[in-house]
Length: 354
Image (cartoon, rainbow, N blue to C red):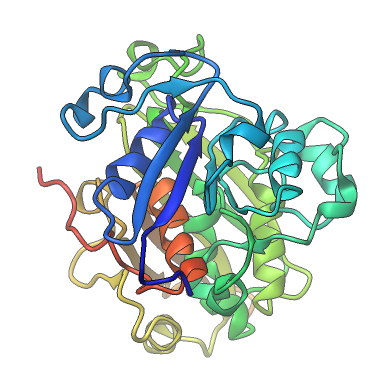
């Protein structure tokens, strides 16, 4: 547990991106944290509140371009919000310095180097380190995170898909192939626009991308197998949606005909009983507007009535804010567990409405 005599001293690497902005929105007002250093490769020398305008008056730290050894001087914990593939060697350097590390990129989420190479299209520079990071999804792996020194924070799609499907995997109701379509906001593509991600080009359209090949696919499968899903496989189609924040997922699978709506509702309630961030909605279905800006997760399940060959269809619906529960907010949730403070410290505010 972090000493009560002083707050944990924290550095943010990749502070100028959207993930960095969201980290700072939570960390700057956290009672157990002092943000002491901001590191990035752009906006060098600028005050961070001139980069992230919403932080005006909240932080006068300037952005620095530092080597890891200098970035962690006097620091207890570092967040790294770097692009995947770029992150892998940098994270390894920080890990070797003995500081606590929470990595928001995807390079240390998977346990298998060959799977990483297939989905990230690169040979992992440190395959010996795979499987050595706690996986930062507290609702499933809280004990693993608590007190860990190295945490790999989940992907946004992987967070929501896992929370949607893990209860049913654990109840032996998910087996074989699962299908998922999930729509996501433009902020998930980062602060530097490309022709495929620039918001003016996506604001009036829906566009699928990386069908059946998104890098979060093996992460989701890995989580479901750890949850009891056996030899489950996932067919995943992500869709670029005309909104800034949010992910809406619909997950499809089949169950035996004797599994009805009441049983599926019970599985979901039993799995998340006492979980403060999980909202099992009734009378409506999950929507991104209800969770925007918050750590909340909305979930619901629909069991179909049409039985064919002894099987009936099931759809699990879910919504999160991709930058908060799907990103930086969840990393702060893991930090709280690592530091031994209340898990939801600094994270309990409701979202934005409208």
